[in-house]
Length: 124
Image: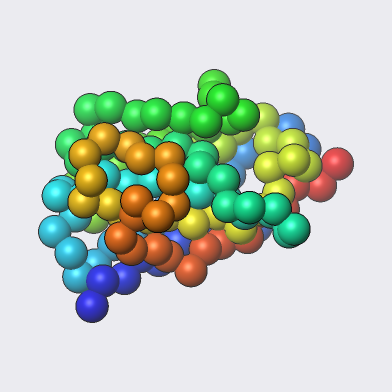
């Protein structure tokens, strides 16, 4: 079956950096665009960014633009989220998701598969 497994979360001080990774299995990875979402306590799931099937295009939410970078390696079936200049408002559970749709959809229901998520906590 399809599995998406995130790693790399943790506790970091404000201004710090983290790199999240998502390993995919059970699907033809290069046929799926990948997205990163986050959900803070008491808030709705929020689109962070996405990357197309070949990695030639990315799209980011305005709230993180310029601080987060998404990349993928189709030879290793992985997608990464590099985060810098983190602040407490970035605290959330971060999840990767795969979609067979074209482009980089921003709505969660457009995605076919989800990982369990990894916690990112940014202290002030």
